Every structure is written in structure tokens, then in C-alpha cells.
Amino acid sequence: MLFGFLSVLAEYEHEQIMERTEAGREKAASLGRRGGRPPKHDQEMIVRALELHKNPNLTAKDKAKLLDVSVATFYRLIQKDAA
Image 1 (cartoon, helix red, strand yellow):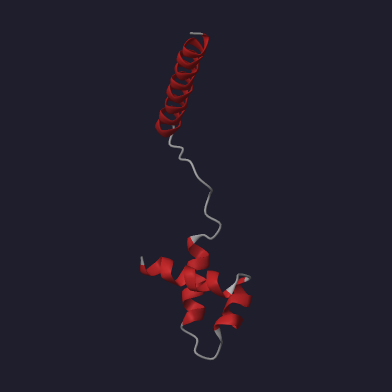
Image 2 (tube, helix red, strand yellow):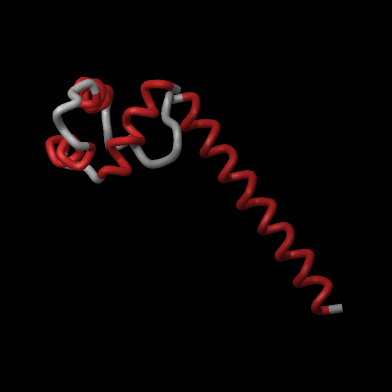
């Protein structure tokens, strides 16, 4: 009987936490905030990557070094523009 009561109490507390969390998310959304990590690379860097990509004299490694990113990130930046 004690375990049943504790189970009900734990379930009630869980529901309370979920309700408060959802209320906080709704309030943040109404203030124009959204969750998640902010993007590290802005539109300016994407434009620079596309300009460098047009240059056939540089390798991908050179282009990435000029942007101070890895080669994989360089290709990812180019793909962001296509999306």
C-alpha cells in the first residue's frame, strides 16, 4: 500500500513538472525565443564560402583554411545555400 501511494505521488509530481516545463516553453515562444544552440556560421560566411568555391585554383583544404573551418564544414556551408 505504501508503494502504491508513493507511485501515485511520483506520477503526480512528474505531471506537475511536465506542465511547468510546457508553460515555460509557451511563454518563451510568445516572447519570440526558441530553444537550441545558436548557429555558429552566419549568412556572411556562407556567401564567402560560395565565392571561394567558384575559384578553381584553390583546393577545398585551402578554401577551408581561409575560412578557418574544417573541410567538412566548408562543404556543409556550401550545401546550406542549396537548401
